[in-house]
Length: 411
Image (cartoon, rainbow, N blue to C red; front, top):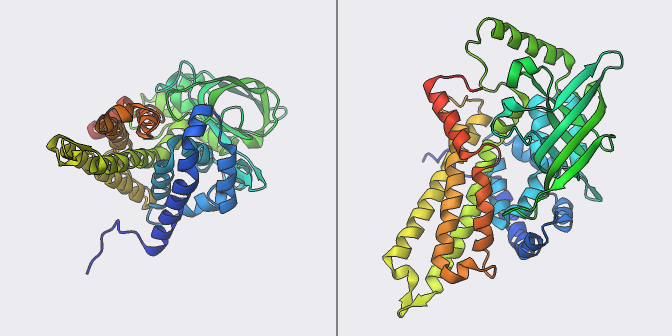
């Protein structure tokens, strides 16, 4: 008998169950405390490192799962535990993806291990793309990187914002403008090593949700880094810029789907963000379902009321549909199939909107209890708001999908 293409194998089931146990036993009990403290949960990250969850080896194993499902399985279970703590655990991964998407093999081997450290000395990393005037519009980026040929150094100046682990990271990956005339095609990514003078933390943001994850500005003031910190190397950058200039002189034409370093990172990470949203939605749904089964009004459980039952039915349907979109996009990426219909953006869009919808339903089902911090659905509802904003807003996802379907180049 044929099996589903998305039927998990025994190893995947074991990893899923192991992660679920960590999320239930370690993350859930700590979630409310770190949400209130609005601080990085270093003890939980440390425990994740000790058991092997926060490590390069673990994420590499999931990243190179030939089915593509390793990362979405991991993201769903960790974010089922708690979104804020989970983002502190996996936030380094975005910087790692930035290096994987743009770096040479030597750079990948050099920098990614330094991003994680080891269980006795845990480190974190940060990916810095957004700016005060350049969020969804990456073409408005102003952070500059200027090459000094005499010393083969780069000098970075500018301010990045909304940076997960910004300022507290050991390794920062910075997207900067190297050729302003080329717009988003004139960007490149750089690694700023630990302790580099001129990189400082700006203001730390106090957020509506995911409050256990550190988000801050990163200020770059005359930051000097050696030439080997340019991801991909100078020769590859010069070749790419030359092609972009030639296309510009010829009136554009065609264009790459992913035209710059930031977009390459986001394109690779969107299904993973969708999986995060699925985890949060599932957590809120399960709490609402249990509550509806046990809460009685007018002499019967409230799930016996059609108004409640139908909300739960719709929530479960959306969650399963979102997961399938995420898994499809993840499988396509692993199989090397192009996102001809922007399947990566589809998965992120639908899963993000699902998380907001389902967590709102959960608060409503719990009624007054859902509005208090005594029940976690209140926190989950706040956390879910971020999924339609970061790594490409829902509006940007719709734009990407529409342009892909119409054949208009994505800039």
